[in-house]
Length: 209
Length: 209
DNA sequence: CTTAAAATGACCCGTTCGGGCTATTGCAAA
DNA sequence: TTTGCAATAGCCCGAACGGGTCATTTTAAG
Image (cartoon, rainbow over all chains, first blue to last red; front, side, top):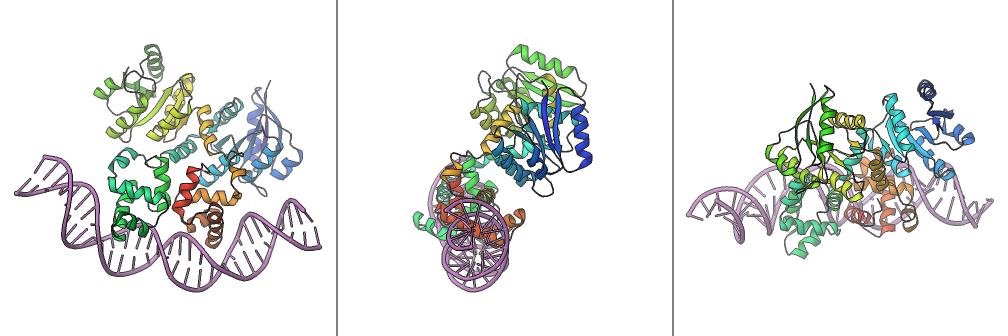
């Protein structure tokens, strides 16, 4: 039983090459292809996999994900894109995409990705995978950093996470605002961040507090 | 120039098959192999890639990552494991692993993973990738119901957590700074906070993002 | 005893934020 | 069709922050 595939891709040439690729292997079977989300939504039926371009005229591929998923919650979707931009990746993942691969990916790897998603896995191109992983280890030197925070710095860090202002922190610790600010500067240096929001996110991700 | 590889794997049979695999292709060259972290740490030198088993007698592969990275910060490490367990995956990623693949992966895909990491990407087996992606998916039971944040607000919230300023967020989303600020005001109202630090802490504690 | 690191405190300056308003557009539900 | 919410955008103003530089005191380690 061949894996059925639907395609939404406006770029005719690329769409044709995908169709040709799929037709070349009996393990895969093209169910339909459309150049826009609008046309696809009108006619499409559920397939094993949908290859969905991100940059489409009209409704974008990103916006199409929730619509498709609402109609067929089990529909598996692999995003095709030329962009490696953070925002698009995370948005696609948040919306429920099952894969995110770049158009420059070699044909055999595209089929690989389809196979992987069909088997219940997820397909990410290596560079995208790296960006996602980077979310879990924003700076790769966390061992030094966590241990290098002094007791006082950790204390102040925990108060920052509570959302206190420098002034309040100073009052709580019976030190001046300037001293608090100096400690915070040192914390920023050590953790390589430049704002409270960043330091809170990092501290919580790295379980420093 | 062949990609040099080091191996830490206690299971003799599997280690031998890896060695044989690498020896079969001139693009890859085995630099060394040891059955334990202890022995490896005594003798090992930097290679392009280290294949590191997780379940090792004595020091585990997970604990070995920071030690190795401290000695050679640029050393790339791919974890080998039979386990798909969440805790190990995230622990490995947090510690700075560059890949996480299952031992049952086919030989050709193991070489693929090595190549990908060598080229600066990350290597994840599809099932692992799926688990990581699941981390980003809003569980509609928790996210949509318990929080009244709109889609746009959630999007902006996620960018705040990355530490972006309002101005940068506006650029990323192609909207004006004022609009960003309005959204943030609404987020603050809904989550009952009054600063970025607070909203980041709350969002991460409540796993809103 | 000397030295290094940590903790304390201060000043200046420009940027960013947070809270207070008002207002228009579009879409969807009532 | 009206009502309401979401998203967009603007303005003002004071508070808070981030970065730079410098200086003193205390503590820990050698």
